[in-house]
Image 1 (cartoon, rainbow, N blue to C red):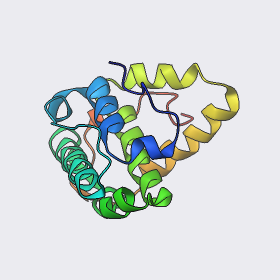
Image 2 (cartoon, rainbow, N blue to C red; image 1 turned 90 degrees about the horizontal axis):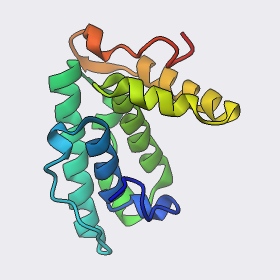
Image 3 (cartoon, rainbow, N blue to C red; image 1 turned 180 degrees about the vertical axis):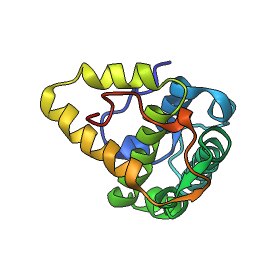
Length: 153
């Protein structure tokens, strides 16, 4: 099943299923084994989102050597209950960060390059903000740097 299949709006992201599929498709690793199912109950959505967030933190720590502080502060309960679109946006921006800094970054950047110019420009700004985020951990290793052209370089 495609990562974004069935996703028609923000409410389709609040249970973590689409985000988990997207991450699994981009980088596999800790995201492929998450036991995430479509949920309508906010408590179960919170559990799903908590699993996704924990796997994201683990990926940033192990693969990139740093964790964006914004990811650590994302309130999954607010997303699951609300949905709090501002919190969801912060989480999805971190997903984009994994995409452009992870092992499949070339494929993700190629996908971005295939978008309309105004969408590319917007995503470039989001990527630049992600790269500038305060981080916990050591300096980002070479593998964590985006490929040339990903953030306007």
